[in-house]
Amino acid sequence: MPSAIGLRFYQISIRQKGSSQPLEFESDELATPVQKFIAEYVKKNSSAIQSKELERSWYFDIQESDKLKNCRGYVHYGTFGFESNFVDSRTKARNYRRKITDVEEIPLYFEFWSPPSETFGFVGFQSFQGRSCINLVMSGLKEAFENENQGSRLYTKRYFQPMQRPAFLEKHRSNAFA
Image 1: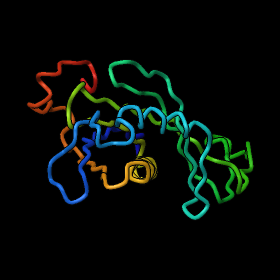
Image 2: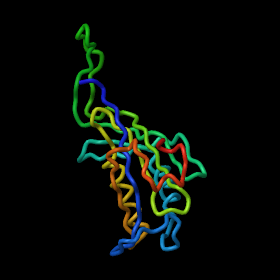
Image 3: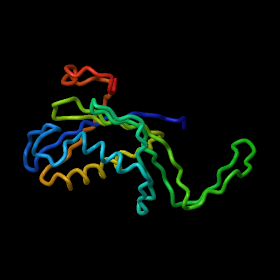
Image 4: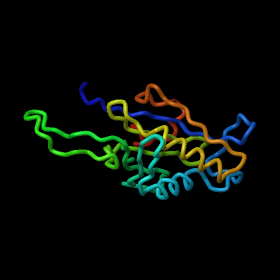
């Protein structure tokens, strides 16, 4: 199978529990504005987090964070918990014996972006050969956000055709996700 690289895009919104109306990301009803919370979450999770039951490890490597509500970099994501041999594909000679504690780590690009004074933001994640850190990262973000902002809920909606720019973005011309 050839190396398949993809990008997955999600819209993020916040609502008060029981309400269908989205909150602005800088709403006074939130303990921490969404953009600030995300930046702190990314920074806080910049050292390896291991899930022994899932045999997965991940952490953020921030490349850029700016005043335009952008945060981008890499999520170093990997699997551990099994032994294997790394062999030369031509000679079949064993180059390395992988230990149970070794992590096969793949750097996957991420970007959080939100336009100013809006009720939504976006996150994009790279995937590689069907491997993705999205569930681990986003479930952790959702849980942490909702713990800090009691009564608020973080929602995500996947965009299946990321190359089509949603009409509501046209007023926020940007290179983000272009």
